Length: 86
Image 1 (cartoon, rainbow, N blue to C red):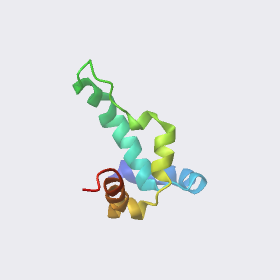
Image 2 (cartoon, helix red, strand yellow):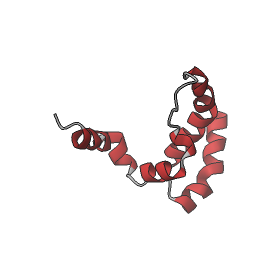
Image 3 (cartoon, rainbow, N blue to C red):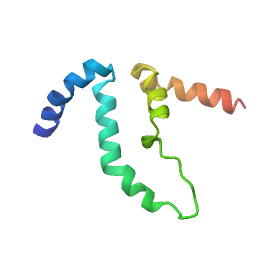
């Protein structure tokens, strides 16, 4: 818990400059650091997986949607509605 509090204090200036939620920053750092690298070891060598965590355009596009809308999952519902209407 102490490390999380320290991280929150350290990230505060970046949150103000970037206007990216500290929750989004925490998720990205945690996901990339803990899961993304090892996750690709599980994929078949013959596949070409999409790694959204090394694509700045996708990250910026995702963060352009408000956190409130992402939490409500309305963005997901709209994507499904547009791509899979039935």
